[in-house]
Length: 325
Image (cartoon, rainbow, N blue to C red; front, side, top):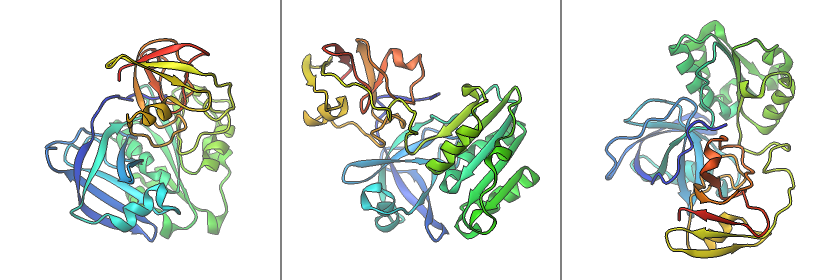
């Protein structure tokens, strides 16, 4: 599913150049290079960065502007609970503050072979969708743009969607108009058409049901929670196995009730992690030897030959995996 999951990329220092309130619950942060960072690695359309949000936690935020080496623009919706990260961004981050971010990754990339696209955004899910839409418009890809929210005043970038995409975009205010029929938004599959959806879990699951007749490779979704039928969400047998850290030669036991990520953390090796469920790609490390049982939704088959997502993937009972650590 991922087109550009990278490993061993170190954090970057950025300064908060500007904060803008887009809605009562959504703030936009413009981040520019700081410290030893001179130029930012550009984000691809649909890509995201991870931001260190306090207590050593990292949270992923889609980059609204793509291809820019001078700034990252992210929009953060305030949600309940400090541990979620958004409260830290809203209440404790100000202009001039310096943050650590991980370079952009992308598990929601634009299909190069697409000749037409249907885009569905729900709420804050607009952030990767508008980036994809802008790139498609630049490349001349015909698109249908559907943006759902409860009320117009709560929908970030609503005016930009109208102004930039005109008749190709439709906005739905569900608190006033009710929810649109997703069957009508998804439509029938036509060769060369790709479907992109990002938003609340219920929107993702319902859209996937309506697109059940579409080829899987033509349906793309940005996940914040794993759907019930994803490999990481389905209860699967877990056995004890071993990992070997190639750089030190140390061998560590991974009990059935712990993950590789847990075991590495226990010995003082702290990997950035966000979802801890197999869909963000943050805790990926190089796999040098061994047969892994991959339970993520991020890595492609090619990437799985030499990488592993440590929060969910494992090895068969008694086996050993050699990691570049």
